[in-house]
Length: 611
Image (cartoon, rainbow, N blue to C red; front, side, top):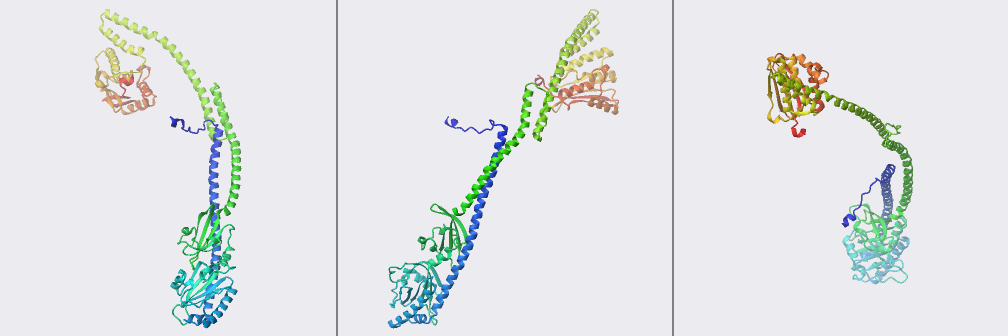
């Protein structure tokens, strides 16, 4: 019961006018097309902006890569140049130095290091970590040199030292380091613990074969930041340099440095360049990345989508305004056009109302378009056709009344004729003339169904009885007994047939043939769903041209036997076709000098179907 109450009734347009339905349909289709077009245009513009952003960023990445590689190559060149210094080679070659010797070398080398740090402001510090544990190096303001042997310096216990040692003689670039990672003491007040990107390599003196020290050139991360930060196109975005293990070694967001990159899992290792969408808090970003071949580092640019969606939103608002204006124009133009179309329809409706009030025969002017013009043309044909049909019905009713009057008048003559035959019959009985009496009886039996039964059909049994009465009269006429044979199966005796269908064929045989010398054979049989009645005489026959002429006259309904020869085959053929259709009728077959057959085909109608 609740489901029945909550059943939603389907929306129907029957309450709207045709004009309203057409405008709503046209508006709905237009809105659908415009909406799809707007959505497609919006998404296409988003794709274009994203593609353009990627192309611009790729160009920036390549510039950053070139700047970075230039710096790395320059640092690598400086380290090799520094390594060739005489004092540095002496330090690398000496396995054990006295304090005076170490102090002298340390002073000279540190002086050279300070020159490097002063000349190349992107360098933060330079260190030489000898395998014997002695260290020379430090920052521009603080030396971290030590003559203590035994590798007590903190750097020797770090994983970075082992990694560089394992990579000898190849150089290693590592990010995420700080100034403090290479010092043996804390940073004094007033100095900052700078973030570094370090170039480390195992080195040996020129004549040696084993690694004698590790040379470290530390580059201040801020210099990297300034080199790519100036190329950043989006002010609210961010850029990062991520190493091969996913750690951020440089970034415009300082608190992310030395940490694992948040979207590292999305950076496809098999792609050198790509992009994806991500969210950082409530900010939606397009993240574009580029993998540097030489270092394996990944340049990442995070661009807030709102930066380029602003322009798209402006375009979207403009498109929406155009969309609404288009809808208004469509409604106005459609209304004007529909008024023109509906004018003809309203004329048609008005004309139909006038016809309904009895103004039959009125016509309407032609419409301006073909379809409604066809409707109006059919209406005009219908209106004039109804008028003609009414006139025909009135004429038919007048004819029918006249025929009824004539039929009532004609009932007097058969009644008088039938009473007269009875009088003659009884006079023959009194005069003891049985032949006359029998002839009058047969004639009366023939006249009774003709005048007193208006039905067009009766049974084959009744048709045969009518034919037998006719044959009795013909026998009295010709004065001799003619031969007649009947072949009617018992199952067909009650099938329906046309009244007086067989008698004209017998009459033709008697008139045109010499039947006193032959036999008339009447047969009835089924032929599929049809009933075949055959009247065959065994004397006479006709030549082929005569048979062809007779059949042609019957089929074309031009011939006839004339009033003097009875009703005739032509009349029977017409009645069969009128009652049962064009596929039924009469056909005459004959063999000259032998026999003639009249074949009458009608449908099988049993007595129950006829009733």
